[in-house]
Amino acid sequence: MENLKEIVKSFYTDCLTVNDHTDVASVMEKLLADDFQSVNAKETKGKAALTGQIQFFWKLIPDLKWEPQEILQDGNNVVVRSTFSGSPKGEFMGLSLDGSKSFSTMSIDIHTVENGQIKSVYHVEEWPTAIAQLKG
Image (tube, rainbow, N blue to C red):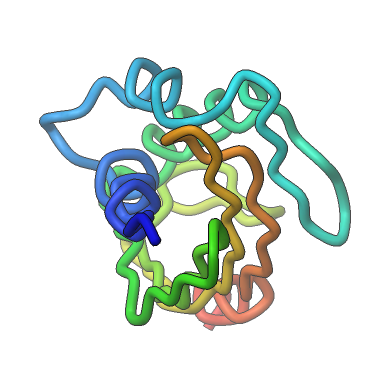
């Protein structure tokens, strides 16, 4: 069985985590399948929408860090339990922030990898916890 964990891990290190060595749009272009879908309880986003959202987050949360704590593989599915943190600067989820407050919370994602690319991700993120910390 092919080890797909490194493909998925690069999504966290090169796309979700702000860094100075990545052109996030070009990395996501290669990493995500053309018919990619990002699915949560509220909505489904395609490749272009998710790329735009992540580019926006890079500007809004310049210290955004997404750290996988556990990565498990079953066939072509890769499950990632992560912590993510940052200090937003600007309008963020109904709050006006100046970067002086930070959050740290968690997410769980299930990625499906086909032909060396991420085809889909189902994800749950603890944004209510982040908002409570930023209000606190």
